[in-house]
Image (cartoon, rainbow, N blue to C red; front, side):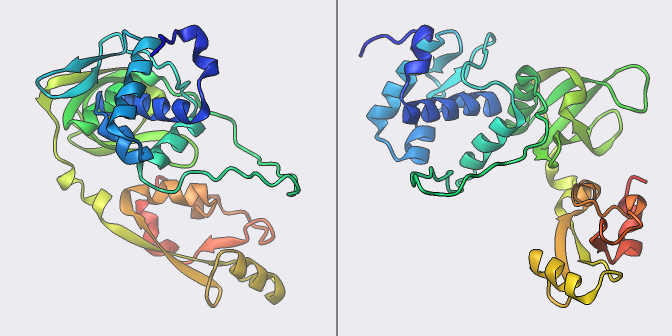
Length: 291
């Protein structure tokens, strides 16, 4: 096989680029990867997967090394993403593929309608920090983080046991046990100024995170002040029955969901044409809100 250098990366075929991106993302998330990640995800042969790894190594030889005792490739201390840029949308696309959901369908019909998608402003991820936190979560380890909260003027160094990466619809968080706070909390990745994975320190199990595993039923309904015809349209839009829907959300994620849907009781708009849906069981949910 001809050696491929970084100057030829733009010439890579689309399908090969997708496989290499998954390879690199797995390294980023867990710190290690086997050829099985490509064979299982893309249905290619083991021989083809081995060739893909060889291509990746030729592109960035300092990013991974083969661990003979564990029989997998692991990220080196000098790992630097080549195909991933750190865009939030990019990470969401890759993580969706990792969950095994159907990959996006490419529209080939030339006669279809024009489509314009409005996207929010991109938030940038520091992939070095993302890698340390994600690999610690994947391998059940602790991570030491310098964290700048919005309630303290100076950053605080805390030791976390991360267990789940969370995208709230606006930005990335990690759900983790904090040794400093002695409880499970959410930490915004963008507020981390540094993160060091503690390879020799086993993390606190997520089994004690009761707010993560308990689901809270949110009762969401059409604003009752809207005219009947408008209520019917809104109800149909959200698949509601009799103008309401019961939506289960993890207890720890309730405030994020309410803000995402713009139904936080503390932020309701007085005009029903703007506040078209609202939280109907606000009294039950209010103790869980930040406000």
